[in-house]
Figure (cartoon, rainbow, N blue to C red):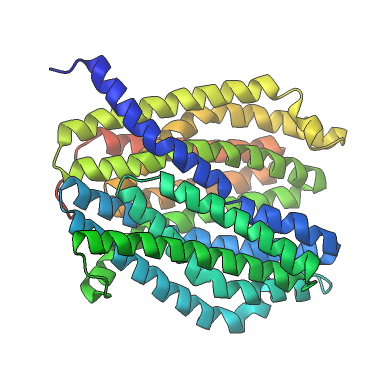
Length: 441
């Protein structure tokens, strides 16, 4: 029999094989907008502001559709665990057809609403025309973006996170080259930046389509859209859509409250939140591994293996969370100086980073358990409990704001939100109801 040490070592290799490339892909994705910002910034302040507004609108839209990646990962991984690769590829293709349908619908619905969306984000008269131009062009890249999400989910479900890393790096590189060509050489302005992103995202989508079609030919999977499969993908994704929307509400409200506190508070909050986001990428990589591995084990009806690998991934979440917390505490005295020379912002950031550091072990467990339950297809439970956590956060954040608790109070409300999620996810993981076995949940 295998010893516990050997089992842990085997699980570690499996987790790291999936998590490390996933982390690279997660970090590469934000570089699209970052490279756009670096180039558009040369056009002036108003175009850069327009990019910021349009980028927020696009990020929100794509963020809400992340269920295309998560739901597809879980479904494909289950079929892999059950030993039916043909059905796994078939399910992945259904997810990609759903992505295309949603993408086309968003173009049709979104184009007439571009001015209203830009206005809702509060763009000034100088910034609005640039934001509208970028957003109007970028909508044509939405189908590609969503196909990339679904294609990523297919490959993750097939236990492959290296190909998404390669595609992400290739897409970022192409985006950078096209932005330089269209904006700086051909002088197309902010529209050139948008077209560069559209082409890069569409090219990335084409790569995923080619990879999945090759897998379909290899395993004899049909590639035509299947209405039953499309309905299954849409139904599985609804709970994840609700979960994601609830998470987005917390992010939007947090930023809104910090902005109402004052300029120094919003500046310090944004820097602290960027530090938080960077660490989320690393923890999300473990969660992505959790999605793929959990789905496969449950598809194979291996409850003991599911429980064992869950414990190991939670261990990794705790270890990474503690390590990240200690890292923040170590660099905390010097970190604010990298972002600001304002003493007021610096003092607020120092206090914020202390709370961010203390929350890392909690975040480590929360993100891992979230990924595990996504992999198990437990979307309905995640939707309900994320809504509960959001309902807990909102009054706490408002009360602390009105009692002048300041930025530390806002981060304390975020901490309460995380602790609520830890409680609800932990209780679920300790039980057995989420461990539904078989090729289909």
